[in-house]
Length: 456
Image (cartoon, rainbow, N blue to C red; front, side, top):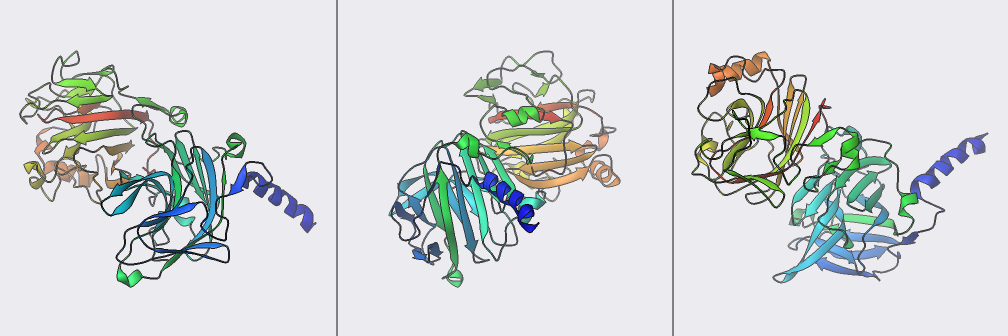
């Protein structure tokens, strides 16, 4: 009886791991570093009983044991164990460049995080854009998937423009991105302070498949959130989930000037796949003016990327009503877009409630991770039955309840107190603000009937 019960489990394991199917080969021979070259820092790498061991070394930058060969589409599997205070990762489709007296490694990194934070399996863009797919507390299964004190089985599928990760059979990340289509694979020992000298990270059973990937790839049985950083596109997953582009990268279709019937004839341009408001002296709505969606939205997920110039001010408003009399920008709840370091508005308001990604003049943002001026930043606004969240670059920075007693108190103490029922309409327009500074937008997309309390 026990043998009959065990057989289906064995067959399932074979199907999930691809055992018994052609296409797999060892990436690491378990004896030496044939086929690898060390780049970056000078941390020690050794081989012990068939295990690749990385030993942290102070006063040296991140160190990487890199494959000599580059890979495009592949499935990578390995087991890893790390001291609970040592951060690490595995680079995929990565590259290197000379940076002074050392070699800088950059590209996609699959996180190994044995700390309580629990970001293992997330995808970080090493030495470039930072976090692309952080693992946040909302993805409880992913946060709990990593065994901090034992061996962990990783699976990484890099096929086409999609990278997916699993830890111990739990799906963690699903990323669509086109920055790199190939590159080397590398095993990282993170730079450390002297107190962490000698801490270790270990890998074993490292194998890769580069053929028969269609058969070996795991199905989309668990629908975790998919992050798409391919500009102005929708993946098949996003289409199936109900996302729609509000900007297609080439036209102003679906938009018009606020309080106008048509798109502004000047002040806004579409170039290089971006919808850009031009500089006009820094005054509010005095250039091309604000633009709004023709349609109105209630429950929604709104995603967009923005790039600000030095000292710039702008915003993305939602639940916008054109019924309020105003000489400046149309009225609505605002996701603030600002150069906090250089624009004076950052020091106005109360407790920082006019800084980047804040609910303008009402609630300050916290836990912000800004990629910087002249870089693309990803914003996300979620509105579900009165519950609203602001996200910046994959991290939730604030949340609130529209129409709550606390919300109404904040409104009564703000510049919006003169607008009856401010921010409480059932539906409203989405608005991109002209505040007289150059700001670019792209990948503006929306999903109605938002899910809420999501990963990001």
